[in-house]
Amino acid sequence: MAARRALHFVFKVGDRPRTARFYRELLGMSVLRHEEFEEGCKATCNGPYDGKWSKTMVGYGPEDNHFVAELTYNYGIGEYRLGNDFLGITLVSSQAVSNAKKMGWPLKEVTTGVFETEAPGGYKFYLEDKEKLKQDPVLKVTLGVSNLQKSINYWSGLLGMKIYEKDEEKQRALLGYADNQCKLELKAVGGAVDHGTAFGRIAFSCAKEELPSIEALMKKENQKILTPLVSLDTPGKATVQVVILADPDGHEICFVGDEAFRDLSKVDPNGDKLLDDAMAADNSDKWFAARNMKKISA
Image 1 (cartoon, rainbow, N blue to C red):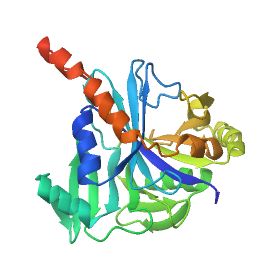
Image 2 (cartoon, rainbow, N blue to C red):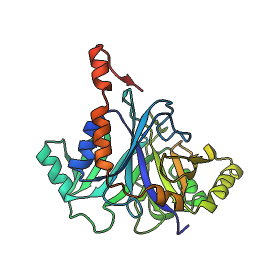
Image 3 (cartoon, rainbow, N blue to C red):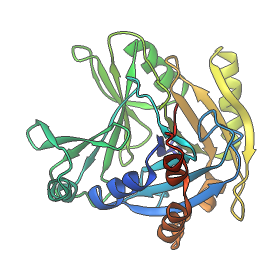
């Protein structure tokens, strides 16, 4: 299990320019790579949509040693409905707090030195007002669960995560694969988990040889497999193997072969330009406005 790594969380975004501004100017992240696709992903990386879409990876450093965000944009879809499944990402950056104040971006201090803000689309971020850590400043991803113990049994018992904290009173637990990686926080929501249409996906890497055994274990334990082991192509880049699972509450989980993913996820120095060029060429907002129409709400 030591070789497993927390990689990224996938967000569906409706307003790409405002989203890019939030991650680049407010959080201070960099565009690590940007890719455009003409048709939907075989592993539904962009959700259950068949059309043209883009993927932008943003973070505080290379994906080899940082937990990052994957921003998926489906052309023609303007907004997604939030559920109670994704409860936030917590990161350490006094600069992000300062940036938000300068930009006039809404901020709310929820506990001493911790500020809540929202990315476009309503995704919550918790900013700790401290100097950015030398390692990865992204501390944890928080997901809502309906039954804490059942979720712990899945994530720890089946997927091999270490339990770092468990608080019965507050109905939360903190898990992870390594001390120096972004953690997964599970928090009971007091009822069923609603994924809305904005539902995301959390990704981890493992040795390629482990992928078939992960799939076999889930079959043996009668757990849900959303996409059996499949190869995904990115034009001009490495082909990766993935298996997509769902936990007891339907949270989507991607496991990808580590070696090929390290090759695929190399930082592209042209990432910023590729994103900016794609946004400049995207006339979908004007097209809809000229016809007095709105983009689809998923």
